[in-house]
Length: 120
Image 1 (cartoon, rainbow, N blue to C red):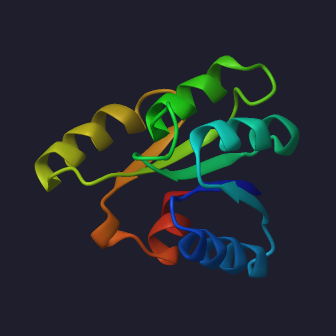
Image 2: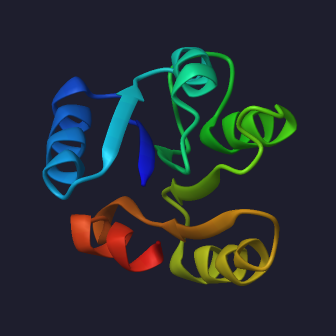
């Protein structure tokens, strides 16, 4: 699987890249939405794992919708990491999981390698 990661912190990004690469996945990442858009066109990821807040003009959800509109990346799935309250996150998960390509919404406090693997 080809996984694209979007985190604002380079150390966090590097840890996620290293872990999933060690599991046999092709990985790439960036720290801004604009950089992620550029990487995605050539990388053509199967999955985008990103925080809602990113550097740049777009947030993580906006980035996903940009990828969905591009024929080269329209099949990319999303796991979104955001600070929503549990009730709001559960509501979004119920709505988004049923919608096109969003596999789940995770709070940063619940984020782990295993939690991401369970969603895909």
